[in-house]
Length: 144
Image (cartoon, rainbow, N blue to C red):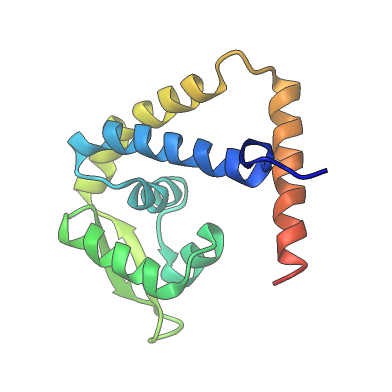
């Protein structure tokens, strides 16, 4: 049996990702924040003082990409980068006062976005989705 375009789960996930990214991008625009930059900010709001390497691992992004986004966030005044005290080659990111203030504005947007996305989905369904996406990621990681 041959699959049609609409039958591929990867296509469905990709289309959903495009919709999610497009929507959150429009919601973050007033705060001068791109969706990927927001991911860095959210991690720093949870744990201030992460290194660029730690962010790269947690976001599954290459170090160059993280460095570029961090430089951009620093230009906007949301973070400051400082040389690590234990490894001079490593940079640690800290929130500025402006970055802390941004949290009060953006976190409600992120929470509302999550509510919109999860509307009508039960806790059990969300747990199952998390389990299935984890399995899919593991399937790909086995082949990398």
